[in-house]
Amino acid sequence: MMKNYLCILGCFLVFSSCKFNRKSGKPDDAIKRNDGLVNGLSRVLEENEVQIGKVACRALQNKIIKFKTLHLGKDFGFQNSTKSCPPIISTSDFALLNVGVSGAQLNFKVANNYSGSFFEEIITDQEFSLKYFCPKINNNSSGEILNTFDHSFNMRNKIVFKGTIEEPEVEIYYFILKDGNTYALDKKLSFEVDISKGDLEGNITSQKLQIMCSNLTDSSEITQVFIP
Image 1 (cartoon, one colour):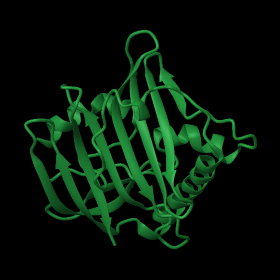
Image 2 (tube, rainbow, N blue to C red):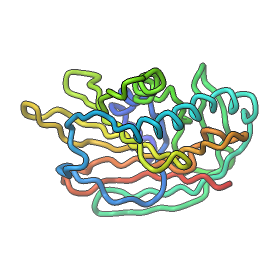
Image 3 (tube, rainbow, N blue to C red):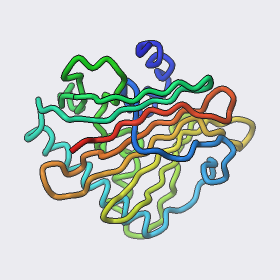
Image 4 (cartoon, helix red, strand yellow):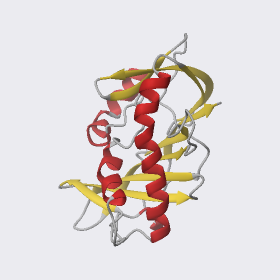
C-alpha cells in the first residue's frame, strides 16, 4: 500500500524534493481547490511575514549542523496519522524514526517494526521552495518579495509565513496552471518550526501534507507530530 502511494506522489517529489512515506502535522481545515485564500495569484510578502520567514529560515539553516553533529543515529518519536480520499479511511499510530543522512540530505528511517507511513525527508532551508525563498528573505532590504515562484511552464509554488516570531508556521501551496492564467490547487505542505536555540533548533514539531482528491472537493492528509 505504501509503495503504491509513493508512486502516486512521484511527480510531486520531483518538484518539491519533499520525500515521505506518508503522514503529516496537526488538524487543519480541508483545502479547497477554489478557495480564494489559496489561489495562485502573486502578491508581495508583508513585513511581518518577512520577519517570521527570517526566523524560520535561520532555524532551519542552523538545524543542518546541529542534527548532523548531535542527532545522527538518534531516534525521534512521532504520532502519525493519515486520511484517504473518499471512501475515507483513517489511521493513527506511533512511529519511532531514526535520524540519518544520504549525501547532503538529512532523512528519517524506520527505527523499530513500524510499517506505516512517514515523512522521509527532514525539512531544512534546503527544501525545494525554501531554497528559493530563504536567500531572498535573508538578503532582502526592501521587503519587495513575491510570495510565489514558477518552477516550470505550468507549475507554481506559493509560500505563506504565519504564526508568530516565537512560533513560526510555514505553508507551501502547489498549483498547476490550467486555462490561461488560472491556477488550480494541487497540494499543500504545512509545518511548524522550533526556533529554540537548543539542540532541537529547527526541528519540525508538526507537519502535514494535503493532496486534492479527484472529486476536487476533499483532500487526503498525511500528518506527523513530534513527541518530545
